[in-house]
Length: 226
Image (cartoon, rainbow, N blue to C red; front, side, top):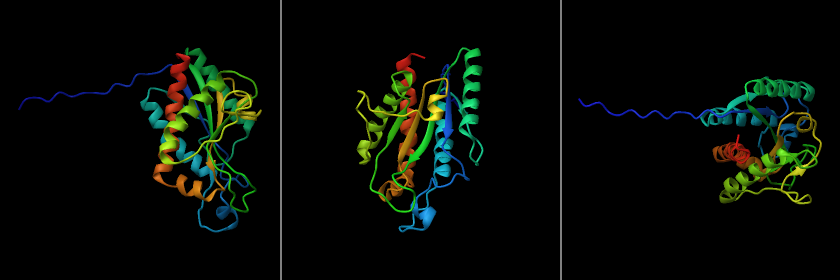
């Protein structure tokens, strides 16, 4: 029998380390849907620590397939202090630099409009950087562009703050301020908005949010010519 040609898809290794930070931990107070916290109907059990870890588990092999080295900042289920998170990230930045590699960090979270005791109306995907303009803003904009591309056809929305001329929100969150690389904090929809929780719990929702991160990170690396 004639031999069939075997095509092997080679992975193009990129000179970039992606740090993925899971938001919060199993023991973090709050950070869940009103039903999870107070059994407020409808029954939509949603816990941020679990959901963000699921997104990271889905995203990591896809980024590795794209040729990135991926470092999960918090593999533990319990919460890890912000100081320890930044220490781990910055150690990875130093390690990568010694190998001639660039590093970026994405902290993956869910948003909330209230205290977790009742369902709210706020909705939309967003991303935060520190105050001022730097490469973190470029990373944020690449993620926003990806979010519009992915979410708009699905009828989902983004939230923007145009006061400084770009789309991201700005605040000196500890993890973005103290990570020594382009760093953003992503708020993947609202965990106290009924419609968004319903959507986030679907395969479509999970895959869409993962794809935003994948597309945005790849675009940023291309923009930076890394």
